[in-house]
Image 1: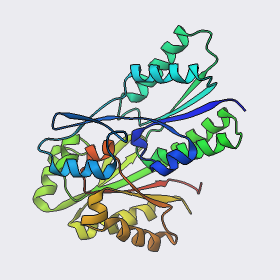
Image 2: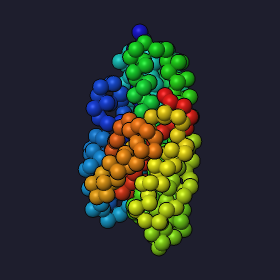
Image 3: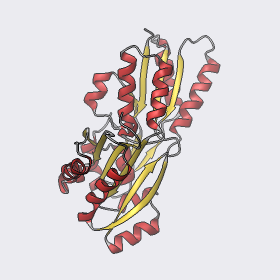
Length: 293
């Protein structure tokens, strides 16, 4: 079997125990907060970042993973004798990271014509465990002896069906991130509205507004029921605020199980890069549009 590596970036939000179990390599996004830089996953875990963000004076920003970082990774893998490198990226329309990887791969091939390492790059068109889940599946398939071409076909098919629907208790961060317009966020603050936001095919859209926190979780569960495929696996992603301050994760799990007839596959923490755009009071559902896995 060819020597291979499965690589992704830290916005995948794959829990650390699964990263270790499946031997997945992760390049970290840099998060800047109050003038300090942190490498996601390396410098802090989600709970540590939530605390920093809640106490911060300024707003967080994230820095893309550069082509230089990718080139350095390619050189390391090539020197180690890797023959096939699979990189699954964050949504290309939401970050230049994907394009930086493509540029670095093209440049590396030109500058290393004798290299035997083939680099494959897949655009997830999504965020968080929307692609993290399938990075895990790709690693499992390759470990079982699957051909890289078949794994890439699998990824492209599954990722084309991934949808995310989310909401937040506070509009402070998400308004500044540009995920919804400032006008919509301002109206929400005045009227006590909570936006129901979809992330589909690399695009975000406010599909509904509900009044007050009490209506937010039922709206998410109803949206899942109306749009997920039959027996589609689904997951819940939440920040510390959604877990602890509001208890959303457990409540949403119960609501979704009632709607769908089966429980979520998992409940996971939203990482620093995602939380930089949503704030620490966010909760999301990740599912497949049509058909079970």
